[in-house]
Every structure is written in structure tokens, then in C-alpha cells.
Image 1 (cartoon, rainbow, N blue to C red):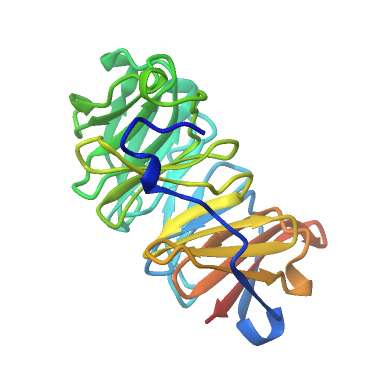
Image 2: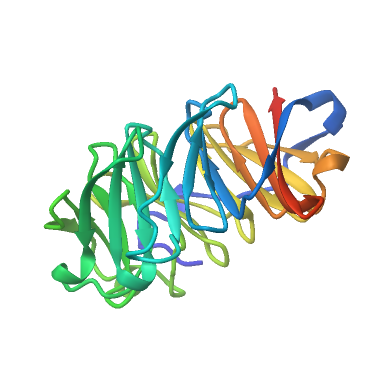
Length: 277
């Protein structure tokens, strides 16, 4: 992978300098939730947001208590992404309509942004910014863009095809640690500052369930879980606990791991919650 001149030395190679640990010594079961679940995500306060087969979103607190429901499910169809990086403002992204619905912490609608009004017709990935704006990767123009709550363009990067070789097509965006992380599972991670200037690269490839949380990057490959520490470039890896093997979706916070099996008992889904050190 080629970076612009002057940034080659900033490229961080993901090497197998890993510490493999026994899962039993790292993970501790907290609870299991059962029911109608097709997808989920978690915020940094360990609130859980579950999407069911009726396209409802239900929010549960850290103790597993139901605290809110989003029922306005017919206008845009299936949500493509639920961004809960700010627990006070949840973003629902509907890719087919190039539209974001903003919710408050009680999952009430507070705003709707249609990217098409800015000429953004194909936004493969979005992410919430630290200042409550929205980062967008515009597939047609190959640019990272930032828009405000009204959908107005604030800033954009140059065309990635002019500065990155080979072509880069991120599917995930995270605003964390005063940087913006774009992840293409085939190419790796590119790190930008808040002005859209390329700072660094991390050669993490083919990870599923990719997430940037605090000082770590989390992900999985088959039945192995990975945690990459951003500032030290050290990586921990763990064999997945036996109960979690063949799970469909994982998510992580700094102290917990969540795993969803869409069919586990009597055709219900099971969400397993584990604490880890």
C-alpha cells in the first residue's frame, strides 16, 4: 500500500507481536439476553441497542433494563447502520435512501438529513464526529466529507484516488482519540486528523466486527478475537470462549465483549455479554 510522500515512515505495520491468552482467564460471563434480535450495537456506557425483525430498535441499560423503543419503522425500511458513539444522539443510517435519522437518548426523532440534497448519492460509510456533525465517505467522488445537522457541507478531503494507491474504499468510519479512522478490510486503516489531513496508516486487514473504542481497535478473524492498542501498536489475541464460537455479530467496549447468535434456543436469538480484562 502506497502513502503520499513524507508519510511512509508514519505507516504502522500490524505485526504478530501478540500475546495469546486462554479465554477462560480473560473473559467472565455477565448475562445472556434472549429474544427477537437481528443486529445490535453498544455505546461506551454499555447501553445496548437491539434491532429486531420488525425493524424496531430497543435500548437497554447496563443492567439489562429496557429504557426506550424506536417505532417509526416504515418510512425508510431497514436501517443500514446504528451509530451510538454519542449516547445522547443516535444516528440511524438508511443507505438506500441516503438518509440519516437523528434520535435523542430516548430514541425520539430530532432531525432527518437527506444526503441527496448535497449531491451525495452513494455514501458507503458514515460516522458521528466529536462535535456532533457527520463524517461521510462519498463513493462517487472518493472523498471524506463532513456535514452539519442541516446537511450542509463543512469540509472535504481531496479525491482519495489522487493521494492513495491502490484504491481505497472504506466501509467503517470512527471518530476517536482526536482522529478519524477509516477502515477498508482489504487495504487497512487510514487515520486522518479533524481537518481531513492523512496522518497515518495501520495494516489491519480482513478483520470483521471492526470497532475503534478508546485507545483500542477491536476485531475478529474466525474464532480469534483481537485488541490492538493504538499508541503502542501491541496486539492481544484470544481464542474465543467456547460458548461464543460461531456467533454472527460481535461488539466491544473498553471492558466488555458482546456476541450475538441469531439462532440459539427455540429459534430465538441470544446475546451473550462477557466482561474482560
